[in-house]
Length: 201
Image (tube, rainbow, N blue to C red; front, side, top):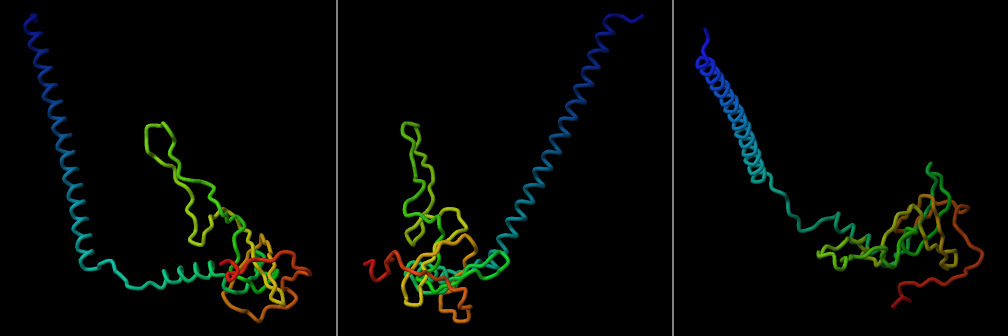
């Protein structure tokens, strides 16, 4: 006959066994986590050591001169100084639409003289956070999104006229003589006198 005391003892024993099993499972989980953390730390250390060795043996170069940087400086100078060149418009298939000698390089139609945004600090919002604005070009304009351009073309007498084009427009900083005469952009009458660099002083 099972007595009440034996039932209580059996229940206590079962609880103790389950508790030991739970502790054992928790200890195994902790051990697994510790191994994973050790492995992760070892990988980080190995990567750091490898990077340090590569940094010592293959250092990032430092140059006294960069042709890429100089090219950008020269291109900015060409754009700002109005260097004469040759512009040509083509279709997507590469067919020549027109060409002309130019004053300066073609200008995207959405360049602006004033910014469309500004750094703004919202008053009374409790922060000093400012919202960013578009950065202006060193040539004194702000860029927009457009595939169209304005080009200052020269007629045979050296007079300037503007041409707006939404097709592809290329430009060469020099005189190109082998372009077909019948494709040269022309006007019958000059209706506006453009400002040249020597006039802008």
